[in-house]
Amino acid sequence: MTTLRRPTQLPIPEARRERDHYLLIASDWRSTMQPGGVPSYIKSLAQGFMNLGDTVKMLAVVQPDESAHLHLIKQFEPWVIPLELIDDSKPANWLGRKTMSFLEILRCVSPGCRRALEKASFFRASTEAITCFECFLSREKPTAIVFGHFNVKLYALALSLLEHQRPYGIIAHGWDVRWVPTSRNDFVKKETMLKGASWIAANSCHTKSILDMWRIPTERIKIIHPP
Image 1 (spheres, rainbow, N blue to C red):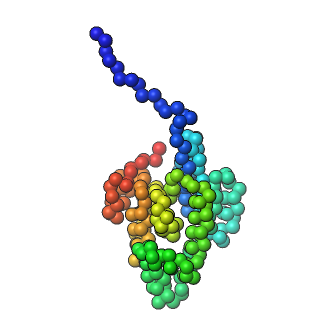
Image 2 (image 1 turned 90 degrees about the vertical axis):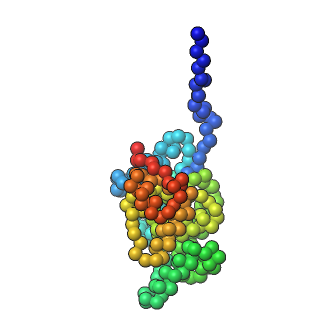
Image 3 (image 1 turned 90 degrees about the horizontal axis):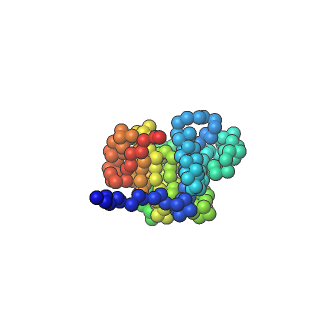
């Protein structure tokens, strides 16, 4: 009796595989200075994408006063590019700090207020970084944008992506999303970044349980254990 067999599904020829252009955003990139941890994870991830034939660019966020770090990044691989991001300065007095915190909340929750506030001097530092960031995106046109780990200090970049309807993902490692904001404005920043993400890759079931507390739709969270 002849047995009918299902045809074997052949792999897609390499020439037909659609290529992706990844943009990874790393706020703790230390290249070869600190082996291990998140920097090595992101570096291995980038190299894995490149081994598959995809292209990768990494924005390594640095402070302008980190001259030694900035120099090392510039001497590293050409796919790692520094992005200087300065924290917006806050007034020294109590009332000024409270006002600034309130304006940061408005910046997150109201797109109309956001556009007006970013023209003011309060947010000049982060707005300049956003301008550089958007110029980079226009030039590179990445097909996928990924925050290498959660960092609330990058909220201005996430706001820019949300403003221009550019999807982004976040890799959650546990310690980064476990951080509990002590102020209302940081709470809103964290909530905005997490809920604005198109997807979040949690490195464990425990990390996913932390993300579940922020009422993020379950389908947006994927558990991907570090290989």
